[in-house]
Length: 140
Length: 142
Image 1 (tube, rainbow over the protein chains, first blue to last red):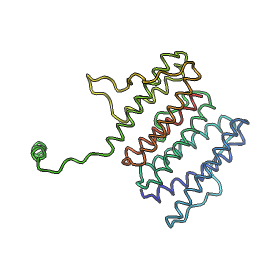
Image 2: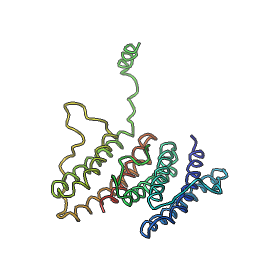
Image 3: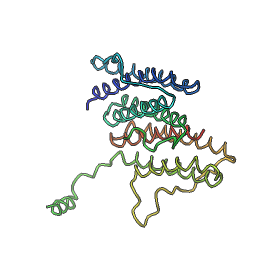
Image 4: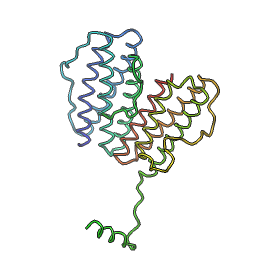
């Protein structure tokens, strides 16, 4: 896959992730909502970076869909969705690292993967069952 | 056919030297960092056994990391999941020992990420994953 295709896939996922965090925050308690707000801001910043990298390559970055299929009715569902969003982004950040030779994109990919792994651990800790961390973030 | 090709290859003593794979040094350095982390966890586990429930899963990740880098041990050789003795004993007390592990994880995570930038694609994706894992460990340690 080309660098632009990898970036486009990541951008689509980032749009969906930002939307998901916008929905799930309302179901969280005060402490976890703070974590969600930080995650939301971080994903938005990465989304904008991905769009900028695509524009630099002469591509027109995709905009977000009007809505995504997301339903969150409880705190437990919100935590579960937040974890899935991070895991989904982690896979794609790792794909970027594995698929590019551009050092700047690789650095972006590693940073993105680190951030999602840290947040995934925070969400697992908030859920409170099972191990907090995984051995190989971003691998399915 | 295969053995003939091997013989031909073996006889090419006038051939250019086999180029060194730059991944080899990066993989060896990453494995060394994992062995050092294993040793550090072992030292803390010996000094603060009450931390076992929290530390053993993380120690397990480092053993998996080492396996991802160097593969399983050949039979008859010592297990690579056993680290060398820690050069520096952990600070006294559970809280200080945990802080020490947090710092060690972050340092290893940063070094993996730096080496990831110059590695081949396949090693880069392993190092990126290891880096992300180390940097997530402080969430479990604090």
